[in-house]
Image 1: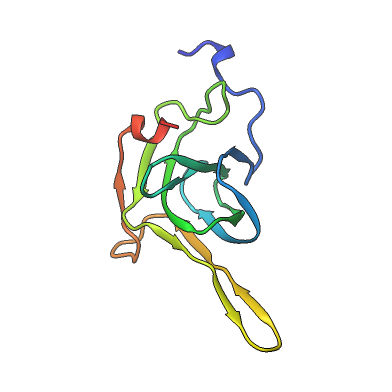
Image 2: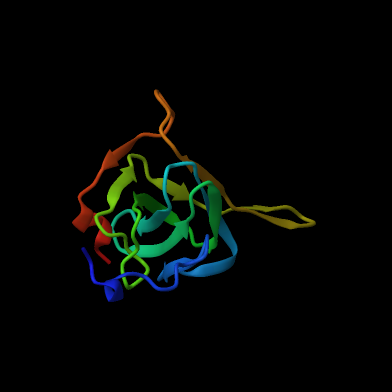
Length: 149
């Protein structure tokens, strides 16, 4: 049994950023996560090459949340489920963590004509639930891999 003071007193709201180390741009990209699993999820967006954490946010059960203004780059998406948030309100006790097997490439495309400049950004949407033979596979990752900064 955990002491009461080791638990989160003020649960983050759905979509609340828990970590923001990545840049935010007005013309940036969006990642949307829909959570159809049994519990709340913490989602971490990491730079693919360095593994450094860019963003993390919470997605409550049966809800969706988005991060807007993400800079160009290749990112890895990790997520973990849990029932009990620890005192820091950013990690679960004994999380069940996974990572999507494919990275998320986000690249801005600019189309210039004689009369206008149009900027195209991407919206990347994933739904967290198990689908037999689904189009996006995941791998279980060690808890320490998920918890590192």
